[in-house]
Image 1 (cartoon, rainbow, N blue to C red):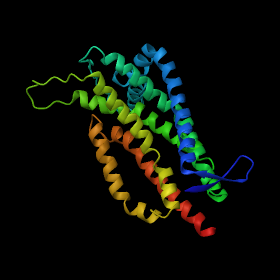
Image 2: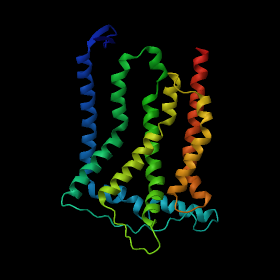
Image 3: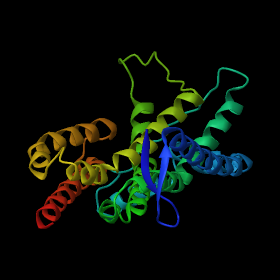
Image 4: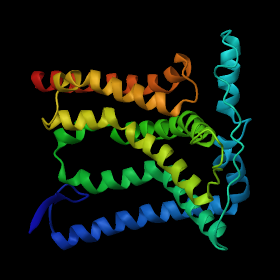
Length: 278
């Protein structure tokens, strides 16, 4: 099996399946090396990184918590947007938990910071197999994928995380208060990673819409048809993770996701329009 690839001089070059695996291996190695380099830096500054970044959503003076409370007061809404204190103390259950968690934190942080470079390596591997027309269509793709991913991570970290942990830490089962929540460090890190990285991936929805519309799997009409169901799911999610039933706090969580879905519809419509003019 051989695929036609252009070499650096622009001449056709035959590469076997094994050659492609070798090329892919080096793309993966370089990506992993970038993650490790950043992870080492984060591990070196782990005490600061853990106190300032990782534990941020649990602190009462977290920038998002203070900003939301200030916004509520500025809008004459009282303490509606002021999140109650979490009063959460994390625990570990083994001697090696804190050391292993430090490595995990460094590697996950390294992946997030190095994500633009990782995607660039992926694009460098795929690009030779694309035509010039396909390459023009995806021009600027690395920038937009990186921007939306980092925006999603920021949304998950600064907005979803405080609401989520505040709700979960203050939720109680039953009325006798005989159950005390004692979360572990591993549990907290897993939830924080799921929220931040999950939001980063969710923010790729407009780009996924662009690609799937381009290959004919979805259409603007399909996305518009499912709009009401998407809105219900988003509002349901916002109602679960926000600690108070007021519309303002739910709007802060749900509005960016709704705008993201509407952007996906517009992107899909633009792709269809471009296809019709070609």
